[in-house]
Length: 79
Image 1 (cartoon, rainbow, N blue to C red):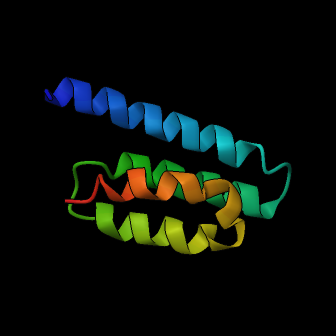
Image 2 (spheres, helix red, strand yellow):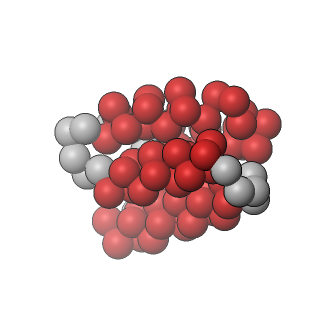
């Protein structure tokens, strides 16, 4: 798979995850998760990506039912 294809696949993952988080309704938790997700996506291909994955997962624990299906795919992005 080329880097362009990988980036497209990763972009799709983040878009799907963002859509799921957005379904959580209004509120502080939703906004925190969206902020974490933005930071996570921006950290792709950096040495801090793993830290951002951990921070997002910890923040998302309360919403595990909604976000759980994405965790394996997200973890597969770790180096």
